[in-house]
Length: 142
Image 1: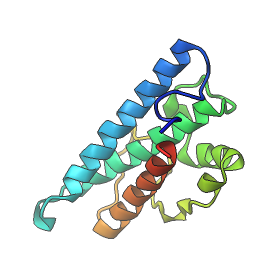
Image 2: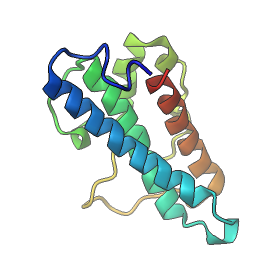
Image 3: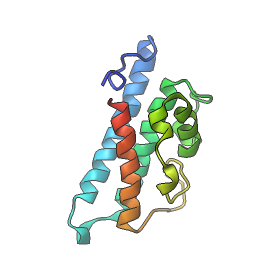
Image 4: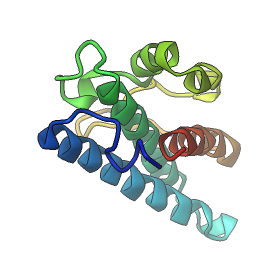
């Protein structure tokens, strides 16, 4: 948990606070996706589950990307795709390199408010994306 609590990151308290805010948002999104998927199957709103799983994954990766000071780490998170961040972070952490992001069925970017509505309307596809977020979450907290 040393990485998630800010230890081992930049000595700057501002950077630690920024990393903690990114992680906090990832946790909120992850929990919302989890809650949606735990509903009875007839009540699951796949749009919500997909939206929050994808955002959680994006934020977990952005946390690591900023931690590794990736190129463009000063950019707003929505300007970086999941694919870009995963490739960069995978070079710095073999655990991330082993994650197969091919299970994603979307544009691999953060969900933006002005984005066209795109979501997986299949429980298995949403579960795959949620599984990727879970893998990144485990890495962040290990």
